[in-house]
Length: 224
Image (cartoon, rainbow, N blue to C red; front, side, top):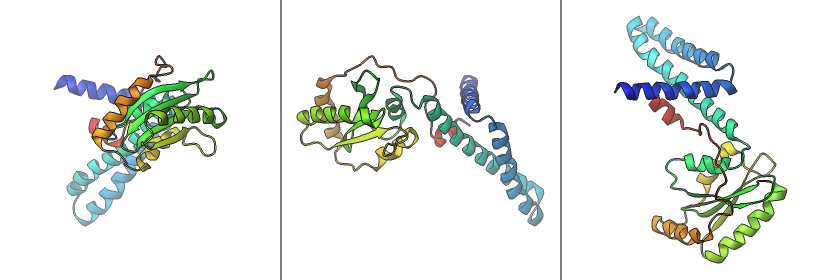
């Protein structure tokens, strides 16, 4: 039990340190949210009922609000730290929970380290690119043709991750994946992955960004 508490506290400390590097005013933000929420809940209850009821209800609600704000900041900070690194999109998708995505990083790579990551899931096959649109469009087209030869009956989608017009920012990648239609069943997804394994990786040694991955608000609250 003591070891678990130490691990949780260590994880929270690391998340706090990482987030504060991006948001210098984090202590003021979290403290302000806590105090504001506490005051909004405590004062009316103190006036209408009694101070004990106000304290019992105000403290956990204020703590919840402050933790939620911290979790949102932690997610943004984590995305900011890995944004622009080769393999960032693959790292984000691999950190997702509940999507059952089968990720194969770097199925296509060019000399500029623009990357195509292949994702297999219930929508079918999703090709996720990282790099300027002018350079990744030919990569996507070639990989789409190569994939379609093996899986002519499977839907293939393309997502360009980046900050140019028409691209999807890294922070919104999960949302874009969740919007795709669910075309395949579980067994079909496994079969697709088995057939695509024969294609291999163009650069299997391509590193995935290290460091903290974006975590959900629920995970941060659970640690708290």
